[in-house]
Amino acid sequence: MSNKTNYSYVGMAFIILVFGIIFVPRIVDRIKNQDITRNDRMSQGQDNNFKDNSKLIFLEINGEAKKVPDFSFTDQNGKTITNKDYLGKVYVVEFFFTTCPSICPKMNKNLVDIQDAFKGNTEFGVASFSINPAHDTTEVLKEYESQHGITNPNWHLLTGKKEDIYKLSNEGFNLYTAQDDEVEGGFEHSGNFALIDKNGFIRSRVLNGNPVIYYNGIISEAEKTDEDGQEEQISMLKEDIKKLLNE
Image (cartoon, helix red, strand yellow):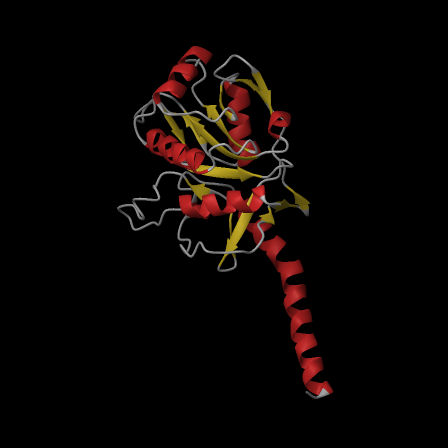
């Protein structure tokens, strides 16, 4: 092989490397700075080509990897749980409420499916934050746990001050949450899950050049697609949990 050909390959590799270093973080920043709307558009229209061995990227804001903000709430066992309790664990975050008549049962059924896929793994957990803490006391959350097949000791159903939970949701994760007496159930919230690594960083994969910041939590792996043709992302989430557990 000639030196000219070798230089060509080196040049192409250098261009690809520079593109990844410069543009991927900017793409993430641009999408993140647009904020999440009620339709959670960042998780829509993604390709369902989930078999991917690439490492998950860090969500970067202004050049810094985004960490889960500090929090402190009470779980279904009356125990104070903070973000530090999840250090060393890979975990999924959701916002829900126990009397939700629509998407919450689907989301938590999918989380139980994920829980069972990692049964016995002490490094996997879930954080479920109630957006109706006035109703969702520790006793209510404990009953919800028993009724919905929640067995992972690292799955904490969390309640606390409403303003703190809403700030964590809307500002800490940019996952939409609001009280609205005109909608069914009285509350609106995102149907997406966030994935957190062992060091408390929000992680993402890239599909077709676009970061998948959050994972659709409503459509089950068995359903494949919803009535609008949107494809499930639970299988993708399971794969990405495995990747982070192996890091």
